[in-house]
Each structure stands twice: as C-alpha cells, then as structure tokens.
Length: 439
Ligand SMILES: [Zn+2]
Ligand SMILES: [Zn+2]
Image (cartoon, rainbow, N blue to C red):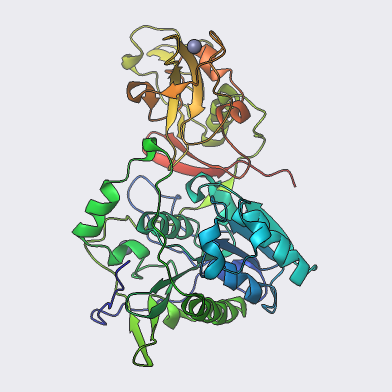
C-alpha cells in the first residue's frame, strides 16, 4: 500500500504513563483516559486480569516481514511468551520472499512459524491462532506488546483498534516494494496520542467500506516485497520491540514513524499527530473479570450474573407490554424487574444471529450464533444444508427480550470463547467483563 509521510504538525502533549513497570506485562499497558458521560468507570485505566507469567508479544501476520521477524523473536531479551496469529497457509509463491521451506507449503503459517520458533528457542512459550485476528478474544491482546506485520489496511486498522481498546502498545510494520521503503510505526494508547485510524482519510475509509465481512475472508493481494526489504522491516521492528520490552515505554515513541528509504539510503523519522477528526473514539476500556462465568454457562446465566454485578434495581419499564418477565417483584408503584431484566450484553466487534437459514430445505433454525466464528452449521432438518446467516436475524445484543429457549444455549455453543470481553449495558453504563480463561 501507499506509504505515508505524516506531518509533524500538532505534536501532542505527552502525559505521564498510567502504568508500566519494567519486566511486567503492565509495561505495555499505558491507557488512562477521561471518561465520557454514562461511562463513568468504563474508561479509567486498564489492569491485566490474567497475569501473564512474563512479557508477552502478539505477532500478527507471518508473511514477508512476520516470517523473518520470527528469527528475531527467538532472540529478543526478556521475552517469555509469544502468540502467533495468521489465518493463511503458505503457498509456493511465498518461498522466494518468506522464511519458509518447500515442506511448509500448504501448512498454516502460524503452525509453521511456531515450530521454527520452538526449535530456535525452546524456552519460549509459544501459542498460535490460525484464524482472523478479528475473532481472537479481545482479552488475548491484553498485557501484550502487539506487533503487526500486515499488508491489508482493513487488518491493520482492526488490529490497531483492538490494541488500543485493551491499552496495549502496537507496532505496525510494513514495506512498499515499489518505492523501496520499509516502515515501522509505534502507537501507545493514551490521551492526546494518535491511534492508527488518525492517519486514515476519506479515501481509506471508502476502501474499508468496500469490505463486506459477510462475504468471508477478504483476499489480500501480496505486496511482493523482496526478502531483503521484508528483513529490513523485521529487524527494525525487533529493535523497537527491544526498546518497549525493556520497561516503561518512552512517551516520545507515541506516534513515531521510522521510514527507511532504501533507494536513496535515507532514514526519515516523523511523528503522527492526533487527528481531531479521527473516526475512532480513542476510548481504552477498563476490563475486569466476569467473576463466576465460564463459557459452559448459558446466555441466561451470563445475564443473571451480569445483573448481580451491575446490581440493577431499576423500576419496571412499561415497554415490556404487560409480558411477565418471570420472578418480578411487585411494589406499590408497579412491578419491579428481576435484577438482571434490564441488563444486556454484546460481544464488541462481533455480530450475533438469533436464527440461521438453510438454503437447501428452506428451514429457519432458531439458534444463537456468533456470526463470524465457526461452530456446527449443518442443518438439523435436512442434515445436508449449510446454515447461513440472514441479515434480519442479526441482533444487537443479548437480553431478556429474547426467547427463553434461545437464552438457554451455552456460551460455548454460540461461539463465545474464554478471553472474550463482553460489553454489559445497564441503563447508560457500560462495563467490560472478560470471560476468565481456565489456564
Ligand atoms: Zn485516532
Ligand atoms: Zn436444511
């Protein structure tokens, strides 16, 4: 994609870091923002729920840059845990410019590089996710340094948004083979600081808008960067990681972009500025554990537990149209709702379907499903059709307004995963609760 030469105008005031001790996962947790109305406690600061054993790095994209970055990862001082994310498999065309061998062709990139990494450094704890970065539970990005080696604008924007939400530092590496450029940009969440989307203009958003998630994974044309150019970006990315892994991030790194122009041999250092017209809301979320919930609980359990946590005792609203929500308490002024009745939750960034359609037999199967995640999709009626999502059956949130039969489904079956962060809404308040991981 087109390289950017951002201006140095409007250099943001750099506030003090909110968190971050050397050698702890909190070293990458830097968010602290002024809350908006109605989100009083939702945006204060971010603290890790599940303490990682030692500094963590999430690497997304294992192609031209990412595959070569693996060699550096194995030797990064102080690193203990790595999560490798890539949805693709290696193809014969990758052999010329990526750190793979012929026997890796046809195999998932995340698995291939995990094996290489373990061979290079058996002490390193290595995890993989061979899927879309959008479907990785948000909690998995927390407390980690996020390194992006992606060539799609859509994926880079999605990654930048996720890292910001959880307060994690994000390094975005890229190459532009046509101009012989290698680039690494650093984003540190915080007030007045630039996010990835601050650098996007209307044309970029028009390109992003042309992406339809329901059409499945978007094919991304290869950038055809040379092995050497990708290696240059990978090495610079490793140096930036070293700096950030050393301890509290230097605030001067926020928005810094280093561009290596190989044709002229020039090094261009610039700083991205916070864009007042940025379309991203710049909110980092305070995420707390969803105590008592596991993915084996039902949606109704989640609503009940959320109600207990939120402590909702608001008066019964007329808009229930006389329907008895069950378990409602009567008062002199009218009925009171059960504690959880007005609580709803969403899985941010994911769509939920409340029914799936079988194109083979025409059946409409009443069932909850996280749209962009897998799960059993064979039609239970004809046992041949593959169930599909239809737009008008997509819901905004899970709440007691939905049929009880649907709410009895276990979270796991619907497509929720440990580490998912639920946005629990009650009145005007939103809380972000992470489904604990059983580790
Ligand atoms: Zn922004
Ligand atoms: Zn069917």
